[in-house]
Every structure is written in C-alpha cells, then in structure tokens.
Length: 220
Image (cartoon, rainbow, N blue to C red):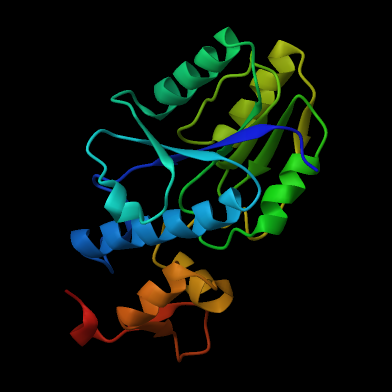
C-alpha cells in the first residue's frame, strides 16, 4: 500500500511540442501530446487519483479519460505552486505527485517506485537536467521548472532543510521532446503514443543508427 497521494499532470494543449515541428505539423503535435497524456494517465490512475492541470479551453473529449481537469491561466510554476499552497491551507490531506505529461514510456512500476522512496521530496530527473516527476511530502516545497530544473529543485530542498531523495528510471527519465526521442517510443513504447506514430508512418531508421524515418504520404 502507498501513502495517500494526489497526482497532478500538467498538460499544454496549445502550441505543444514545438521542438518536434521539423517532423510533425501542428495538428499532429497536438495528437501526439494527447496520446502521451493518455499513456501517462493510464499508468498513474492505476495507483491513485489524478488531476490534469491545463491552460483554459481543454476539451475533455480530447483526453478520452475520465479525470478531473483543473484550468489555470498562470505559468507552470505559478499554477503548481498555487495548488501546493491551496493544499497546505487544507491541512495537506495527501502528498502531491507531479508527473509530466510527455513521459510516453512511463509504467505503473515507475509510479510505484517513486512512491516507495523516502524523503520530504523525491525528484525524478529527466535527460538534460529537467525534472520529470516530483513527489512532495512537505508543503514548504515549491517548484522551479524551466531550464535546468533538477539542480534547482535539489538546491531548494537543501535551502529549506528538507531531505531530498532521487528516483532514477530510464522510462520515467525519457521525456519526448525532440525528433530523435521518437525512436525511444518505437523501441520501448507499448501504448497509444507508439500506435499513433506508427499510424503516421514513422518507423525506426534503416541506417543502423537510433532514429526514425517517415513515409511522407501519411502526414496530414
């Protein structure tokens, strides 16, 4: 059994995944973002409740999952920290687990793994210095996303006198941001994200290197 927790999955549905613009057009990037969110929610909801934190205007049918949607016009840190402050005023009824929406390879095992870690705050680093999951057990903690957020979060925990633990996982650490990241989904993915990429004509590169190729006839 895991301690009581509420998962929060921030989701950007407007202008999402712009760094994939060289291989996906805007409608395709939106489909990809929604597919990754569905894959993340499937794994998280198997273990506990979750809320999608979104910009205003998200159509629930786009997610296709019965989940609470919380809208905010604030930036990522502003919205998350307002939520943390709200839960603190409520007496901190449950721990908060922040899970990024582009972790297409995430599994229930990864979610259970971070929940089992000790510490006032548990950080799961992403590639390139980001933070892909944060388990917050102390309401004094605040998020510092943007740029190299992982060392920022570690430093903040130290400044607050909190015990920070690090949960490392290949799958949880693999956020899908760049064209080469799509190869990881085709190699290791098992959910809607992989199915979508295959339906769009993506396949592993035939040149013997990690990468993807695409049948252009399948683009929108």
